[in-house]
Image 1 (cartoon, rainbow, N blue to C red):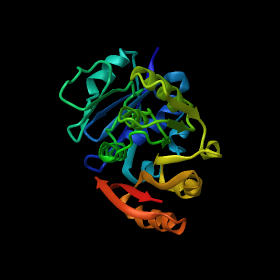
Image 2 (cartoon, rainbow, N blue to C red; image 1 turned 90 degrees about the vertical axis):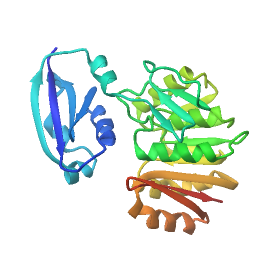
Image 3 (cartoon, rainbow, N blue to C red; image 1 turned 90 degrees about the horizontal axis):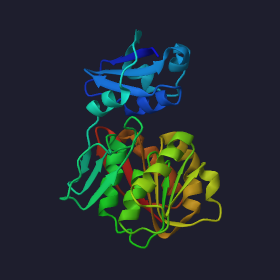
Image 4 (cartoon, rainbow, N blue to C red; image 1 turned 135 degrees about the horizontal axis):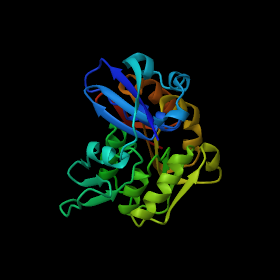
Length: 276
């Protein structure tokens, strides 16, 4: 089968294509290669539609991608292409996140094996990395944890490995839901409950720690729902937005009764921590 190679070129140095890659998977793209500020995405010829690309709900597509072009290529070993471009991640020297084809490490506290379906949600993105760092410093043993917008489930898996119980992971994307199910089993975390849905699932629940790594608009929309199920002296960690968005996130959280604790940033992406 022949494929269309879609090239997305940016003029921004060290531009992170991870979110764009994830969105492209929702319209049929199944393989990705990054090289020299260009993301190359592949889709079977009969599934290609440029209008779908241009209508993706991602504002940075217009802000940072300056050129979209296509070419037709012959089929190839896509798994080999992906593996050659995918690297493991070590967070704070303590948590090693790898794919099944990477070597095991004995010199870290936690090792997580993720089959990431083209690397989305593996700590390569700044927001996931930031929250993993926070989780490493949190004492979650015996505490109930919610991972909202769980992606690959990597955050829920680390929480479980650190002794959190129970742990729930929720995502409204069916791919993410299925991928999280696979990854919790892969890491012997079968007691992590993975669900397909959104904040409407939270009625009559309660959590000591809530992690929401989504985006600014959804966080602002659903924050009251999160706070409604946050226990007294609980912690809410939010990410998925830029540092310049911190004031509006903070204003909303404080208006709902939370107390600002701290923030962290990585390449202009932010994570904020509040407590009840």
